[in-house]
Image 1 (cartoon, rainbow, N blue to C red):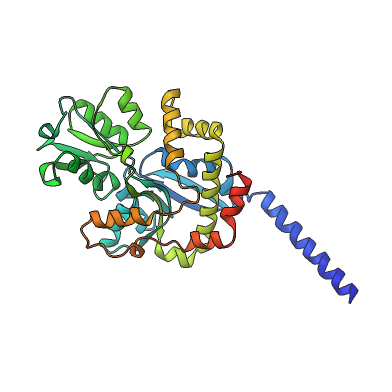
Image 2: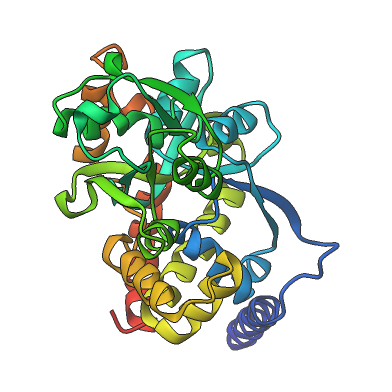
Length: 333
């Protein structure tokens, strides 16, 4: 009997040692699973992804993550549905748009739960009368930059029927178009919003101080992958969440990564961009149900229930296994 106990103990120690060694030494690039993650634009809400990659966290979980700029949320969501991406960093409005047209994607986590747009206007556009009949540039139709135009127009006493919306791609292109007068207004978030202010571009409507609940930047995957590849998605979420904790807890390192990835050279803009990230980022990537409901209400009641677009099962599993508590202890939150 003692021999059996000793043998079992030895075997358990060997297994434990193997697990320790495998967790201590990330898989080689050839052994890792390729994982393509799309972003709508290089913005500060992507910081958790950037930090996880920079710190080797994705590699530690056996993933080789490529972050690709899709130049628009709705465009990226469509690429995800088509199978050319494994995940997309995009707001819930784009999820709704894709699913309305036959797609089947879900938000599984959130990187920002409030509206982060400031609406800037062209020279000479200072009031609603100046904007009426003009062109507003958005990244892509159906994206958060498109959906939140309705909110900004309402503050000016206007509706979408009073303007023309056109797709203009990323924030830098939209900023150039509004400065030249090619378009009359556009929504922009950090860090480009601070750059626009620095360049003297007029603020027409600032939605940021209102802290409107919104699933502004979520992690979206194909619904089938939640059941067919849950291990891969769980590894991606774990690395991303730890990257988020690292970004929230180590300001100096986070600013270095932000400066590199977003090509920020102005120290003041870097400080604002990081402070904006820290103020808005949910540590455990929890999804705002009120924010999701706000978007559904905005899209005129034809859009179904929150569960048609959001799946919290993976986050719930992480909570049940104690992962969030472990992260809070490790990073002293």
